[in-house]
Image 1: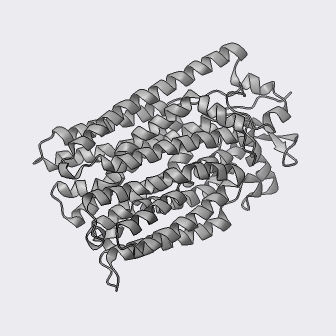
Image 2: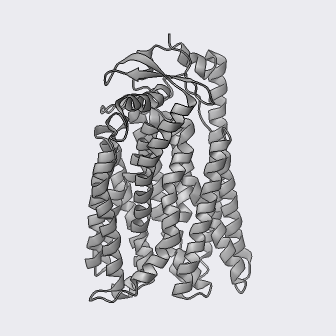
Image 3: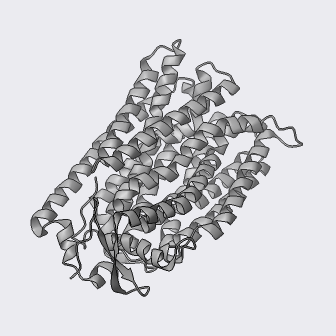
Length: 495
């Protein structure tokens, strides 16, 4: 019999120590100070790599929005409808790439899948500099989406390989913060690029520079991001065993390369999969439009191009503040993640109502509402952390992630199309869709919370506490089997 593995809290933790790739032969004790030292070392080597890539990824996928205000629309003779479709086509590619990446992330190491797709999307982005019409830009945007589809599910898998469930929210927030920093400085960087004097257009220079930066980082990642804890160059042999065992001992999910149809079916039967799917649709519906039209909306309040870029930095700062608050609350308070997501949607709802009902001549009031809308975007890493903490089984996790990003794509595809050209600059349809989305998101996430709390109560009643169940499991049972959260009754869901 194993001793109790602590799911939360302080104290000495028992972790099985692997002597082979598949077997557990001996045990080691990991004190709180040793564990903190180990986690700190992992943080310093893994999180910065993911943070920088997420920053670059955000710049790359929003590059069309920056290019829009420095000449790409006029130079390529796009009309309003065509620009909306080009913004949406990125997520058509994302939609195509999501099931492909779901299978690839099971069949191959997640880090290597991410690295290969990074290099491919960077090359595609640089090729956008030669796009000269709607057809060319649309095709390249679709390809860009196909290759970028692996990063979010890939990063979620990487996070779950290195960190315990109660550490997920903070680490998802740390690498996702790259998007906030990109939002803050992306606009001013685009403005600076627009003043580069060369033989090509400013928007072409922007695509080349953004793509080249990502390409270089993708190559660097091949060498600095380990496949898993067992191959970490920055850990000693003993630390590798501890890093692997402390996570796998709690997740009960093997690092397998086998696709399990039974787990995929279970994912489709799990009501939470569909709630995550709907949650992503209604989270990205506003985001799809605001990513494409955010700068245009700000300009419509009466600001110049330069002022718009500066104000975009403030929007990014608000996003970062909301992200820090959400991650801090989710980390400090147990079972606060779903509530945090609900609160963020209520704040965004208030922002939309401010824009909709404050008179147009009060532009600072409308701008304040626009800044508040950004709150919803801070919920995305918390949503990802809920999946990685609560869905176990490699195939089941990949299937749910694919459904998650199917909804993600659908929202982003539809979002720009709600900004009807004939309704500019007030876009009432788009704002009504946002209002409905934020209300529905609040209902969905609280329904999911209540569902998982109910399941936890049923498991406690049927079989005792989670730690007791773990204590009664054999080492081979807990460590070698790729079990789902439905099969493993010792898991308690994090909400």
